[in-house]
Length: 154
Figure 1: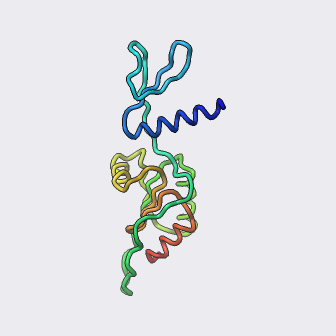
Figure 2: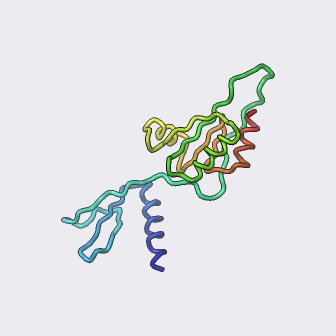
């Protein structure tokens, strides 16, 4: 039960953090408190920052594949991955791209404000977010990414 409480607190913090600031403080007995309300007067508190997390669960693909290309040679379709250094799924996607010799652009959303803005504009809520043409994959699935790339003519 003790292990479940921090998980529930963090889930609550994550859910509420989307809408407003969350405050964290420790009382005189050493108990940690989280609240969307201002902490009691005279208590030193910190605002809990919302963080990006890895996409857990099956990868989801949205958008439609691009129209088939004409027979004339065309430049390769852009592949972009919005990622972070610490994300295990991002690492798997990097390895997939390297094994397949697939050229892509990686944008670290924690190191670049411009990349983070693009990511948010695409509706990003976790990493990796992989974009192939008009298709977007939240999370990572080798099989689904292979389908996306095939549909895009890679």
